[in-house]
Image (cartoon, rainbow, N blue to C red):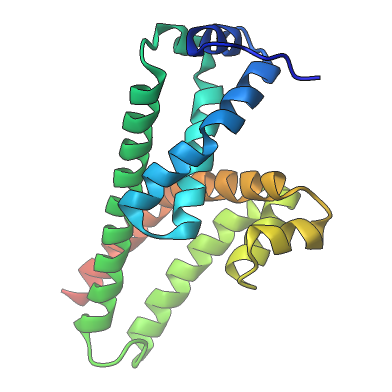
Length: 195
């Protein structure tokens, strides 16, 4: 049974000690508020859900420092806002790169060089996906390749919706790091080829 904590300072103190019940209460109490903030800023349901999951994952990972938080509502708002803005910046960069590819030559993938560039980038992404643990890999493929929602992934894999979301969030976080490390050199190479 989950113990009830009556104020945010007590909850944060308990989470800092690793109390999973306190974290579960925080999660249940603040999920909608964090999601609403993310959705208000980004206006995309799946992205807002992913951001919300990332915020709570980060809270758990940094739980030892939560005792220093004086105003939980403000802290969650600022954390959610920062995660959302970071996501929006990444989306703009991805859009900018896509637009670059679309406008460097007439017609995307219309020549051998562009086709080769696309395959190199896709290979880099596929290599990253292969680095994921098997369950995360399966959930990610169901999401991105089959277009499954979190609920559909949960049914397909016989897991809870929250577990499915967690797999997707962790997969995206890993692939983001992987692509930062590996694709930056690849993108630089691709851009330099077209100059």
